[in-house]
Image 1: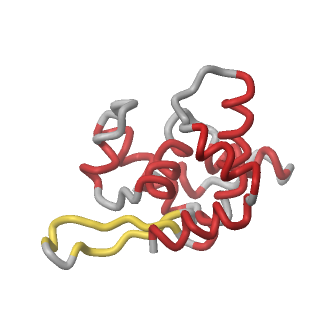
Image 2: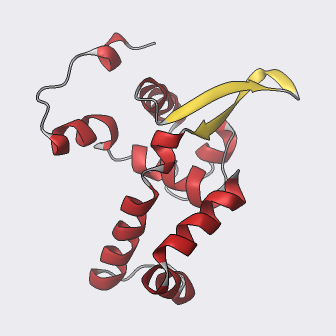
Length: 136
């Protein structure tokens, strides 16, 4: 594992702490794919539309695991492979991702279905509970 993962933070500012865990171009997309699309295996995550390179995905998965945002366990169908899952800490990012979806929808042309936007706006707690129950 990359030893830079274990470095102490530059500061304990809450925003800095979050950025040190999730502030690269890929980590939130990995969390998104796990949270909203149920991706749990390396190849499922690698198949995202943003086309993350295998070496970058491996590095980000290690960092997310070191930050306790995801956990990794052996795949019961193939011991050479792993299943990745969001931890409670990872699931606690759901409201933040929902806010990012709303912000992006408001300011950018996105492909988010209007029903999803309306669901978040109407009853955010129910939307988040539904997402969590579908993935667990």
